[in-house]
Image (cartoon, rainbow, N blue to C red):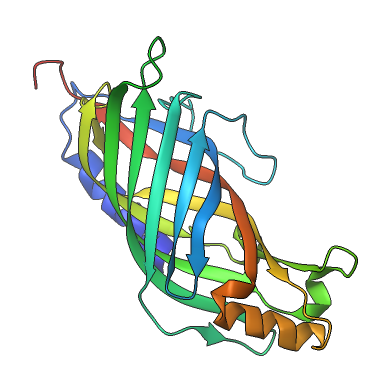
Length: 228
């Protein structure tokens, strides 16, 4: 349903864009590392400009991207709904948040060349089933997976609210899709069985040691004239 509504929204917006403004589609690839991660939300530090991930089939033809290795990002999320865990121990909960993508000057890495701001709404999906977790007793860790491998929808939709500098001419056509493939590493507690350990870690962020993700940002846009 969410995907159908997304396609309809994009079609309506495309119809309203003048013929002089050419619609471009894109897939961008990045990584994210959690600076903060827990039941209440997360803060992700991102790096862009990667080659395509082999787990994602980009449908942009042609793929006209605009992010490179000089672009970083921060995504801050807040949990927006109670978690739901199904019989297979897949957990789902909704979240909201905001994202800022920042391009830095190629000659002066401390200077900001442009930014993209957006509001984020999504659904976090993770596998809490101990039978599929990766347990390293020697290292004292349990690894669980989240994201695209567990469902068919985008992990989030991003509504672009503002663009500046080198990105100022970019105008989003509908919401952009956010797709991730990630892992969470939790502390292994020897006195607990693995399943109880995983559920305890989800409830207590002190037991979450690390989280990272591969990211795809996909969507459509057009560019305005420089003086717009």
